[in-house]
Length: 114
Image (cartoon, rainbow, N blue to C red; front, side, top):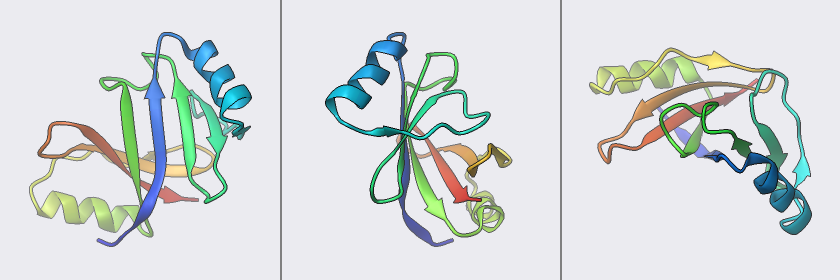
């Protein structure tokens, strides 16, 4: 597996509307809606994405980071071969991604751009 970069950061909050306004109005990030994303998505100039979701949309975590990979199926197979529990890939209009827990106990994801 080859990690190409960090492509995604997301936060979940019960103050989603306020956070979305902050990201737009104060940080100046442009909205980048993604069909079926379940979160407010923002594009950064380097091609990465920041997401703001409600507490239920992100599941068990309040924050997550996504590592960009060229071939998510290959990357999933590599993690499984190393004994890491990882979900099957799911996706939306822009990404395919799969979540896994690292030894630090935190949730991360692998991300492949469509």
